[in-house]
Length: 251
Image (cartoon, rainbow, N blue to C red):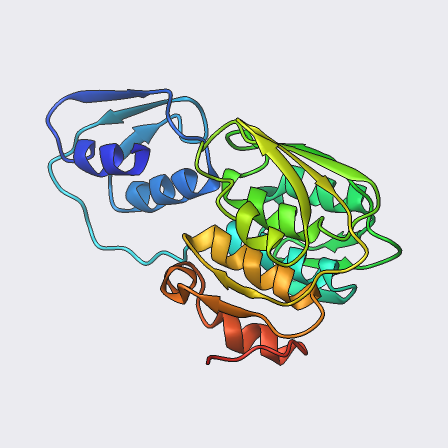
């Protein structure tokens, strides 16, 4: 909504004030591009953005930021399968709380300005996690963390404060043997010894990604349907995961 309002306001006559604006890095990035094009905008990255309409915008060249949700997905996949690897093209400052939580799970994190290296160190530990607007844990990564915690020692508590339909992944991973209890905005994940491959269905982008992560940890073969959702949110995810050793392919 913030992005759409920005695009409408930038050429509108007069001043537009966006209150309760999104503060995510993607908002700052689109404002930076619009500023290069001649827009008059202030307050990006805060909860109030002020737009003074201009008569026209000019062409520009702009390199967009890396996808922090995709980056978080790949980091979770690497950690949950007891691996190590580096995700390039991402600013670690766009995942501040997520990297902290990976560290609490037991990961070794090493970052540069444009990459994040993650390494499995020992048994994964349970954590408590609550989603919040940026700079909090992104709601899109809640299912991703959930699947990465299915085999962790102890009991993890997830609290969803942003999107009330974000627990659709839970019934699917329960087919694999996950021990999860959920109610209203909370989910309690008790780590199990193993998961078993099963046929599961992706109902949305992040559910689909979480099912891939769960399937990579499970014994045996899993068949994931509804992959059009996954492909809408991730570019070449099958090829990318295959390139680092995953046994994953289109059926």
